[in-house]
Amino acid sequence: MSFLALPLVCGAVPADTLRGNAPRASVRLVPDTITIGDRFVMRVTVDKDLMQQIVFPDLAKAGRGDTVELVSISPVDTVARDGRRLTIAVDYTMTCFEPGIFGLGRVPVLYGDKNITDTIYTDSEDAVLLVKGFDIDTLTQTIVDIKPVRHTPFTFREFLAYLTTLPVLLSLAGLLLVAAAVWLWRRYGRRGAVADEIVDNVPPHERAIRELERLSGEKLWQNGRIKEYYTRLSDIVRDYMARRYGFPALEMTTPELMERLRGADVDKRECDRAGEILGLADLVKFAKYMPSVERHNEVYDEAYIFVEETKEMPSEANETVDTQN
Image (tube, rainbow, N blue to C red):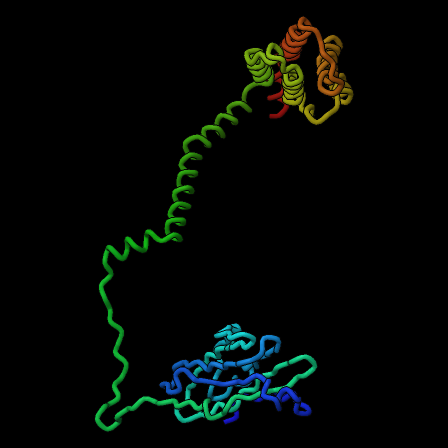
């Protein structure tokens, strides 16, 4: 078969070739006898002058799809050196899937020397491969069917090994986390939801008084947290107004809130008191105003008085229920 098919670069025979100065190429198969499907190495060796350039052939496409196939090509290796003479080699790993005797042909090697470019060839007689097949005695040996699948019992050790695999461990950890989250929600989350419902049923003034007492116990302004103190105080008063009079006090500006408060038939004195509390809180929050220590206590007392003076009386609550009925 024709295994190698590389272009031949040639011209007139150079003088160096005539003088025997051209490189010499040889080929050797290791081993030269294989069993079908085995691999072998075709080593191409070139003996050349130190200044000569050698280009080994790329056999990647030459043997593809043919009986003999190329598997890999090794880098160029220096085998020996003697003065100006240098011996280099390349190993071509190959395989064959058909029994027979195959001549791999002459391997072309391109070389250059000064202004000379030429091609040298290996001897084709050194590239003969013997591929042996398998001896099958069909007369004395009978063909048998494939053995059936064996069913072995499932042991606890195999089950334990399956449980210790990473995906199963991650799944079990995820299930444990979900179970823990459900348990925590049932134990504490529902209590919080019930507590919120109870708080919502508390009258607005009681809720506001409780929040004011909590604010006093936190001692924010005593620890230098002036802005946080006035922000909390303003939110408590606004939340009380929203629950007491039914308008979104937490989302309104102070002028808008005071206008709605006056329209709710609130006593003018208490409107002025609320306006003073919220106005001072706005100055602290947005203008970085710093009231005196006495003013911290005074504005707290004014918020407390505002809630007490404007809280819904029992007679008003009964009238509201009767109106709704």
